[in-house]
Image 1 (cartoon, one colour):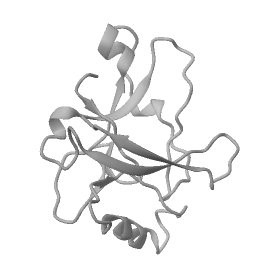
Image 2 (image 1 turned 135 degrees about the horizontal axis):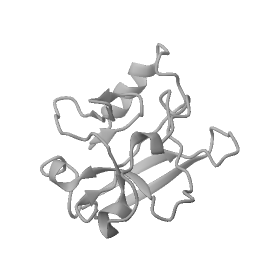
Image 3 (image 1 turned 90 degrees about the horizontal axis):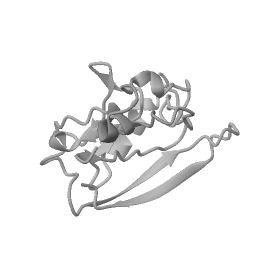
Length: 153
């Protein structure tokens, strides 16, 4: 867990991944100056969530499922993608549910290990902005929250 970098999620209007505007929306986000990565929870590589990246960039930004209780204290089970159920809707056609776990030995997170971030545009001393779509359990897709992340490594 000590070698982790939090992922930045960037979201826009709610669209189905199969809709004609899906690729245009992804392309519009990828053209933002300074853009590094977008996880839309639709794109996959090797079964893991993969990131859209700026044209020409090729970094391994696949998200790993990790239980940080197990990583730090050796307790609890391995985390899997089953710990992040898909909602069937979301900013680009899909989203994940982040649950409050009842098992004290399970705290699953999605992350990119630090060794896969080296030379990628994310790293120590870098700052970034992201918008995260949050379903507060009320089913209102307009509940978007913004964050500003500092010192990403």
